[in-house]
Image 1 (cartoon, rainbow, N blue to C red):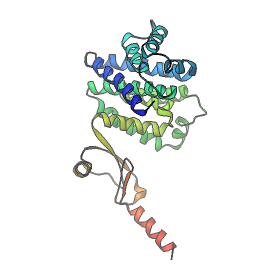
Image 2 (image 1 turned 90 degrees about the vertical axis):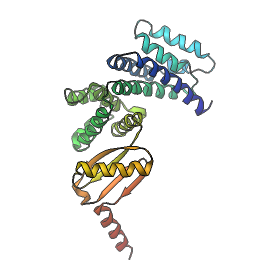
Image 3 (image 1 turned 120 degrees about the vertical axis):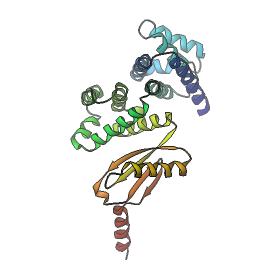
Image 4 (image 1 turned 90 degrees about the horizontal axis):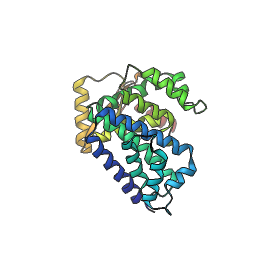
Length: 274
């Protein structure tokens, strides 16, 4: 079974999500997203069920009926329909089905924010929260500690963001705590920021400077990068006095480091070789 089959299976469920969301309120879509994420959590805890729902020996219809029988009366009809569309597809492994369920739940949250015209704000709030956590060693250690129950860490994240960020932002941050795609908190949060940007047809540029850029400087940088990459670019700015001056830009795997710190480091390394 190929990766193409997995992509097609996910795309079918994602298309159904888009169709559902066009006729629903953003808050309804967000509630369905929560239910999909909850189903994903059940699949994570129950590997036998996960294997049954991805068993290639069963037809897609049979697997979907199995899921419907398990969720009937416990989960809303739209959520059941969306997850059933997912399990009716072909999956090379039960782990890929689990990842797809988690991704569909996140996508539903992003769709709800998009339809509420809040997606750009959610993207920025997630990034800023990541900066706050990174800037506090104790907080970063607490939130990212795998030895602590993830539910407890999610409660901490909720308490920190409650009243300060949009509900979708808070829910996505909680997803990051649980480890989106099996990653740690920081990597999960980055992936979610980039997923939000991708839905807005943008790439993310992580820009580090010694002093803040003004609006015109940031606009010019964004325009230059957009022209270079042939796509709109969302600037995520970090101010770090330790770089001394210049600009560092990271887009995907491309790093452009023109900081004074980098030049000094290169000079020291060159001198050390002689």
